[in-house]
Length: 307
Ligand code: R5P
Image (cartoon, rainbow, N blue to C red):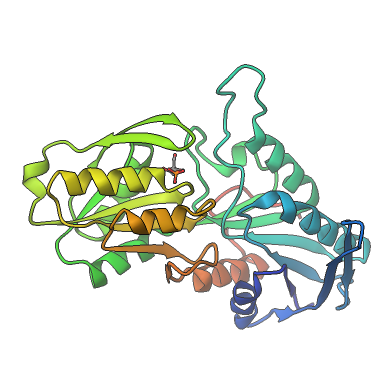
């Protein structure tokens, strides 16, 4: 039977892309808060024996999670055959170990909660630093879209003489991938984080790059301190104003305004989280992956799902 796409609030554009592929249709939900702050959910479209696809990117996840879980539970209760989640930004990937005695490893706990309630997951470049794949913590089928080819295409089309800059060692592999696809050189800076909002970076061999346009590439821009420090450091080193590219435009509090004030040439992100800086479209790739998952001969880039 035709799969049904249900958009959680704020995910309507993503959901429209998912149904634009042949073989899915959009469903209606009613979602609101009772006066006491509790959540009301109702599936207006019948889901019995149908595959349900929930469209919900997961930045600022704490408020979203309960609605997502209730919708998944209601869909299952109402006879849905399987429940998938398209979450272009996957939350809670950064607390991937116990940094201090007594801390919770929330990436594992979050993965456990999602895996217990959802049958498959499609996302974009999850922050895998100390883990090599989602399968280490997610027990459901997962498929990961990589933004690097689209980011490289954007750089090739929009930046003259780019120098790809990774702000820290964690970004090295990702930046080198994009650089190779964009036929551009790359450097990786050394970053020292002194706190949630305090970081310091340094660039080696700066004179070599004076004719280039620095392009900072990172997976997540959250407080933007990493980008702000890097933009400032490159400017003070005499390089051209940098272009900042982030896959996921998390932008905590007024981080976007602060990054703008740091004086980059431009700030560009992928549309994994709706934001004014979105300039690189990944929705069509997500739609294609979902459509593959729906096909009887689906192949997945990560672990196989529960059937
Ligand atoms: C770190 O491991 C990530 O790749 C990003 O560099 C980091 O999340 C950026 O955070 P912020 O914008 O808060 O500096």
